[in-house]
Image (cartoon, rainbow, N blue to C red):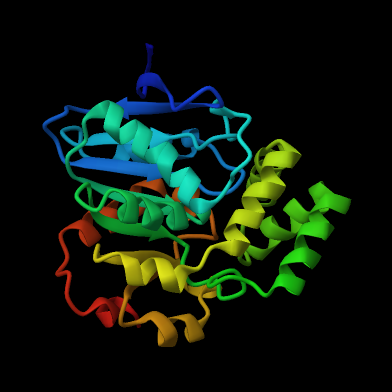
Length: 276
């Protein structure tokens, strides 16, 4: 099934009886392919302006993960690996042979898992403000994970508010922050909590060791923990910038596209050379 919007063709793929994934495709099949994966509580529409800023002769596929936006699922497993299977269902359906996989926040973890699942397809993984939150990656201690999940279960909106505040930087437009909060708080609570548990259980160290795909991240300077750079500089390229907060791809889509294109053409050796 396919419908047309001003931003491309909107299509759906049925993974099984429990899961239907919707996505948008823009650009020719012969162009360089980008796979865009949103973060926790977010939407594929978050990439609309970014998609428009990428070259017209590139193919851009923006995916709504299960339980987010207009993708539906009643499944029981909400791990990063299972989300990666959502992405693989789309790339299989579209016949994608090679692609640069971009993931925002939780989407970065999904992108790495996709690179493990489809190593021949994932030419490169680029995170959007992800991989450097040491309070999430690698997996959180069981007591800390249970405490956070219990807090979300007790007051889901308050938990979402905490996430939004954590990703904000001084000077952010309050109206923008409220828009982000309203969107993220709109995720079904059951999906949100189980997906959050999937993040907390994800072992980034183990995942990175299992893939050979080059991995980098566009990291917000004021949100970047230098300890993460020290720990992962030999495996992850840190491209540090000041374009906004955690959702900077919405605040500055054209500049984000420029960073992505520069990273696409950069030397793949010596990942930490871009950190300063």
